[in-house]
Length: 164
View 1: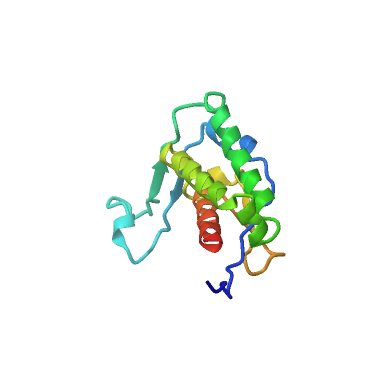
View 2: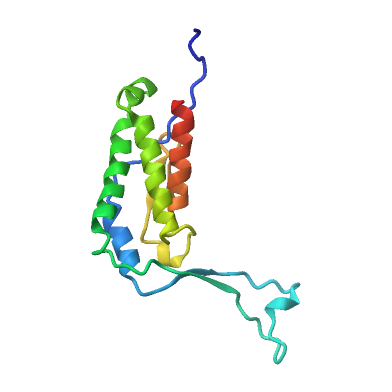
């Protein structure tokens, strides 16, 4: 069987403490949400009485548990991400030998479970303390930082595709 000639570059997450930022986000009483922009051409954003703009705001409910109650799950998530960081540092061959594909799939499933429990999936002012950084796949010196778990899932899915 011929060997593949083209490899997708890996996106590598640097080692990072996820436990403290996610714990702070959980324990913060401020709700997660974002405001819509006021568009002057859309009359639905105006109050009928005095024509003052009424900002549209969506509130996303937080999980009803504290960081202390889910400490072991937060530690597991951080450990999985740090394992990915270690396994994906070198080459595709080294990553495959160290079972990085299985780790990527496990991390993706764990992040998805966190999202289903109400962890941040949108970037807002309330999630700015959560900085999830990845090295770019094509520009390895450039770092990409996002503030929601969705981008961690995207980086993980990129690596699953690159390793298959």
